[in-house]
Image 1 (tube, rainbow, N blue to C red):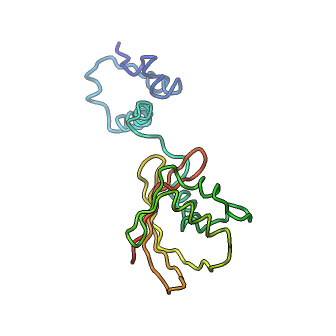
Image 2 (image 1 turned 180 degrees about the vertical axis):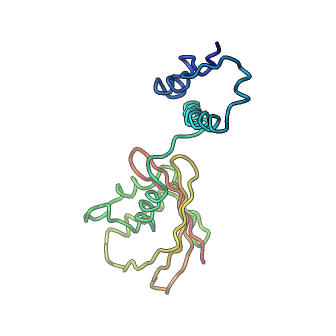
Image 3 (image 1 turned 120 degrees about the horizontal axis):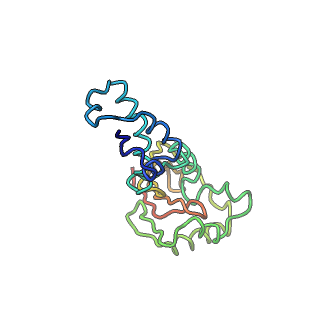
Length: 198
């Protein structure tokens, strides 16, 4: 009597634990060629049982990464609430922003390519923000962001792009913005930002 490879304790455990054992081992197979005459219904049942187990094994061996707890809609909502970067300060809960607040937002290797094509370092950005917020309200910050698009680049890194319309003293300016965000144990951090005139 052949009970098949499915009944090995190690495999049963790897395929999802004891719960699968009664199902996989319930019907002995007396002849290995008997499976050729198995009905379509029984084949579907076998596939139904084995597919979750195969996926489970794949995740154990890192063939397939585990599903993220948060959906793409959740991530999009979190990141749109932070764009445009360094302009959305609601998370500060009313206190005036400090350099330390912006340091938490910008990853150590952060840099920006401005709409002019100039490259700005993290230190330059932090210095500029610190100077700007020493005298809050000196210049109105009028802007509108729209047409958000999101793409996942890795398990913890996302690219978001959008259209930014700003009302500057020199007149209105329309740019296409892109930001690389990384989800860390300390929260979301910005890896890179770029602005392109639209």
